[in-house]
Length: 212
Image 1 (spheres, rainbow, N blue to C red):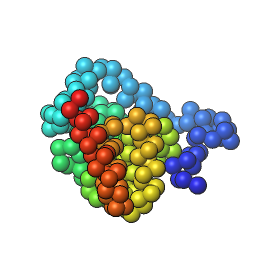
Image 2 (image 1 turned 120 degrees about the horizontal axis):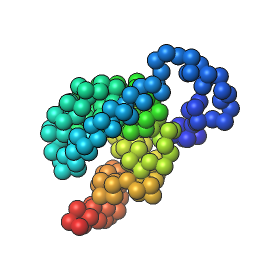
Image 3 (image 1 turned 180 degrees about the vertical axis):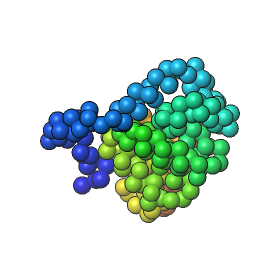
Image 4 (image 1 turned 90 degrees about the vertical axis):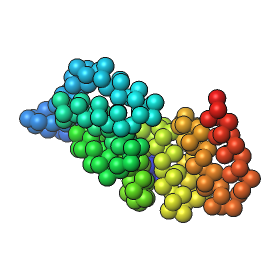
């Protein structure tokens, strides 16, 4: 059975109310941290949106600087930590990105985006086993996330699991991952399998998508 389909304990119907009761009795809980994070995000909503816009515009170092300020005001803002992690990877600092994503996971271990951000950082560091494990955690939380499948496909390709990687890329396309990036990643896998016609077709389609 694919590990990405394993139910984590909080997903299963067999969990009783005892865990919820224990959480209510705990003074400082993950739920409390989520509430702090949410309120912090609302207070700085405009700045957070600007940070996301900077990332979309490929201005990653500026995005990092902006998220630095947000996190200084709200250290438990898991969403800001996750976005800074992704911006750090793109700006060439995957080691710091791993630290940010790890901190976000500590704040909210059910946040699939944080697991994906750390997987992306591990891929950049060529720690493919670690990346694969984080992708599986992300997909266990959200099994319909195309980006999680894309990243897992890249990790599996690096680890030589080529046919499983192709299945991941198919799922990534089905669940609306970035199509051009997915096609380029799948082309790499096809090339390693010696299927050069399919690789060329994927690269040409990705190039056309880049121009639209």
